[in-house]
Length: 195
Image 1 (cartoon, rainbow, N blue to C red):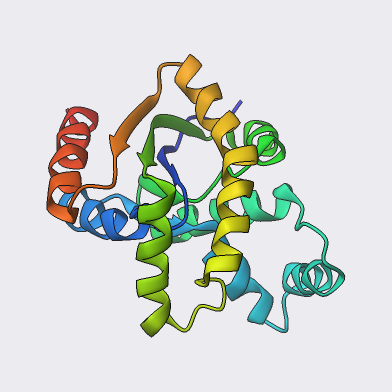
Image 2: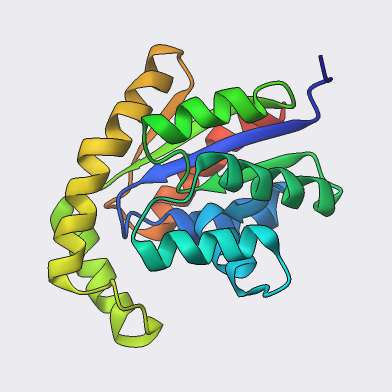
């Protein structure tokens, strides 16, 4: 069995809950490397020489879900490549399949230090995403897509959060406050993780 090499904090919450914003601050203040599963998949898909990239492209083209083993392998590769030990994984695991795959593929080399749950009302999430959509160019920052994304989050991700809550690993943050008020809470959590 491998020695635990990486400390992980999963960062979960609905679209527009402030995950990315707070991850940037955590990275700067505490040195945790921010990894987004979605960003890693998009980058790999664009690598035309990658066997995994071609498979990701096939899944996207066919409207099927990229196997969790691929996502985990990309996360593991990014961890190794960074040379660092502590990571924020943003937006993953999103569902039970992701959770089961993570436990199968990564539990021998990672320790889950915490799960940050940015809990934010639907109305605030939608307004934040609509505002972001004015400048982000993201096609999914529109009201119709957002309602679907929020429903998916409620149906698929909340049970993952409950799983970790039962393991006493969840720190829930009321994320409809100002960025600075949310940061004050996040900072307190990370000061405890670091010590």
